[in-house]
Image 1 (tube, rainbow, N blue to C red):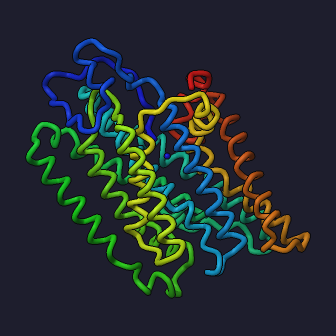
Image 2: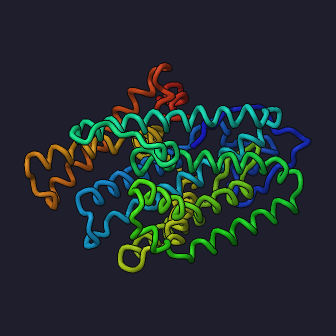
Image 3: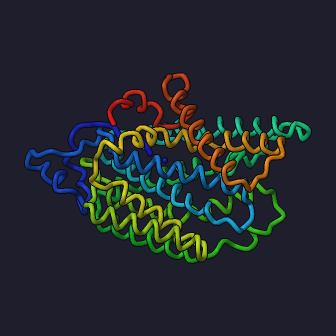
Length: 379
């Protein structure tokens, strides 16, 4: 899940550029007039990684819907997705704000509300209506806490991203002007992420008798705190007004190893908040890798719609769940679950792509939709 990557003029001289650690030789040659990956040019590798993260998240929700007990741990495969989207989104927020110092903070935040919170409200109403259709005898329900929890669990990500965006917007420009302050903030954020990451989810959030939606949202926000703090630190360190971050192949491969290690460690060991954050960081390093190949193009096209896929895939899973329940089909059937997974992902992709094609509906799938139509053939 990211903000639109806009092509703009050269970085201003009165704002110091952030560190160029791990930048590829091609990017580093820009100062000598050599080739450089433009900020406005989409990265095939990054979009491909978005697509794979979207696939993993869809499977996570299919697995938890049809295997709610603890015997199936395959849902953990998708837990790197949300941390990854946070790292990437906040990196581009920081780069965008540094690239355009004339943009007012108020205007920026109003734009974030329009692109994040308004779609959040639309999808909250949509999922509340879907619940009503499924359980008409209970009547239409829209609780006050939906304004921050959403009417379905995955929607919490949008208020979370809006909060992180706001926090980052308040500090990124002052921090860029004062390197000492920037490094101090990064140290504090990393320390806080590690401290929270070592704390288990409070037992009260697992066994509480409070409203289930509220409990689930609080649990999700707590689990997302370490990657959110880490993502802000990552954005402060690597965000830059010019070139996009490109890491060497060795760093990208190391990131892949970290993600696989953290995911498998949780599947066969203990699920931890810190491991989730690290798996997302690892996938982020892979996403900023230097590769560009024809094989990545189909995934890259799908990845451009990853935000929309995230928002709407639950509608297809819940519809399939209702049909399967009505037809009394065994819920633990592997072919059935595979079919729901494939159908939900394809359905979500098609719906997101259709909504993104028209200006009247593109905002429903978030801030990336407006760029999809213009870049559809530029993978």
